[in-house]
Image 1 (cartoon, rainbow, N blue to C red):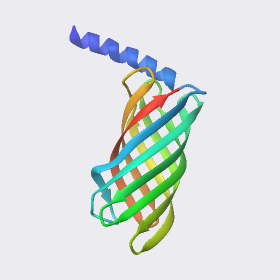
Image 2 (cartoon, one colour):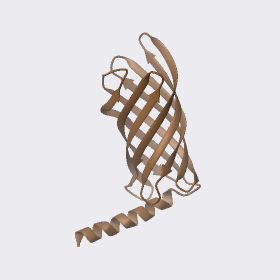
Image 3 (tube, rainbow, N blue to C red):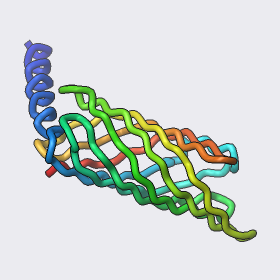
Image 4 (cartoon, one colour):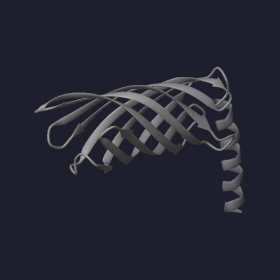
Length: 159
């Protein structure tokens, strides 16, 4: 009986979730990145980051995003990011796939560097209420001399 009740709740949740991925809806997604679980070919030291994405659904399940973020890495390296991208939500499930193009500004003791990058992400929008989600995701960021793979956790606010 408990399993049936859980299944019914999940089905109702996915129908409510689908309503948030419709054309014309807006959302904001602040997140914490790195979480000491990232791998970066440039440095083996831990890092922590904050990121904010926001966007609008141009059509059902497809969102256009703008992205801003900052990461603080061990060894005195700071990275600031601005970008644009998109997300595709798999219909009625909450699983999403995303891609973006970004500009990364590196500041460290020895100088500064600016690089264009490309990012991929995949995650799940788990609805806590009709308009609020918790969104764990896996990401991969690539540019000319750096590749980073890691985990992030964020909240989504859908309007």
